[in-house]
Image 1 (cartoon, rainbow, N blue to C red):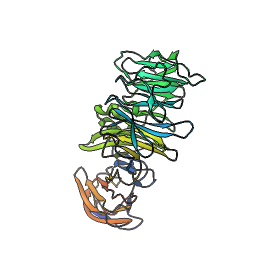
Image 2 (cartoon, rainbow, N blue to C red):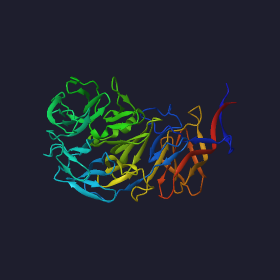
Image 3 (cartoon, rainbow, N blue to C red):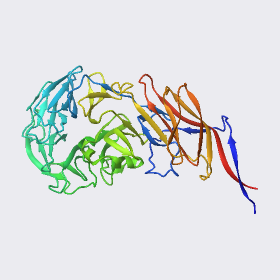
Length: 481
């Protein structure tokens, strides 16, 4: 019988023989969803504050730029955009503490007070007014006309938690009684009448109304685990038609291809008839890491091709991440994570007559222009990307050794390159100091290896990371002799 010996084969440094580890546009695919033996090497296990919009590379996200000055000292619990039909008055509204503030393009000023400290402002724009509810603090429905709040054109609508306009009526939902009140159809004189009639949605069923959103085919009434449809004042679902729901009205997002929302089991694209479309399976352990205390605070918004959900603090494999935002790209179905210095609690698209900008409000009473600038209001942006375990050979049991690694980048000076062999600890390989590409000597022995690129932005240039190259690889092969 032949005996086995081990020999080492050197894969030399040559353009056709080096092993590139690319960064593609597949984004995050967690090992909790796809085992390491089946993951694509062009997806990653983790990415923080890096976007995958540039195919073949990742790019540092943009920052947050302060809008005006600090609004107040407590969380921003609601934002809304007012624009009159004539296009002459533009205001951004924000509820902070017990007051609502208006931003005129330069400064914030109080336009309503004596509200509940913890209630959320919800609004809808109708008849050249912004209609507002603020929960059950004794605050009735109120309207904003571009300069002040009042009781103009509210009919007999009661106080409530959620408000929407649908089919020429105003609808107000009361979470305490499961009632959805509605006005009469608006008259030709644009006058609101009625508001005391209601539809009761499965009362005292152990759930409460958590959201109200219009859809081209129905008014959607969300509870924690069900969705009901109201078609008209005389036609509504007697029983839930959808066995999903949301804990947060603010998690319901209108995007270019429909509605999306958060439920404790995942993020979903709303499907009018049938099972809801789960989009978050690739990041299922991140979804499961959202704390119960944050379910009601999940806040979402969208831009031309992305949906963002602020989910608070999470812990993954013993590592804590603060103030996390999950970002989903609609066109490519790619996920990545952002992390900020404070939790984003509200958002609104602000039209100032010149620019359309997404504004977010945080837990400390600040309003920020989202996706703007190179820092988070002066704070450098931390970034981190970690690959899946890489075996590099078809036979996974083979022992490998790497003696040289290079990183291909743009403006990433100061970034740290690390590796983790087998199931050991992360080991620092070196810090990038050169332009374009930099090689590092190492002595990594492994069956599988993970690579990492991390650091803090300096806030002066656009950082792009194009991937790793393994320049010298020794493979121990079995041969019979």
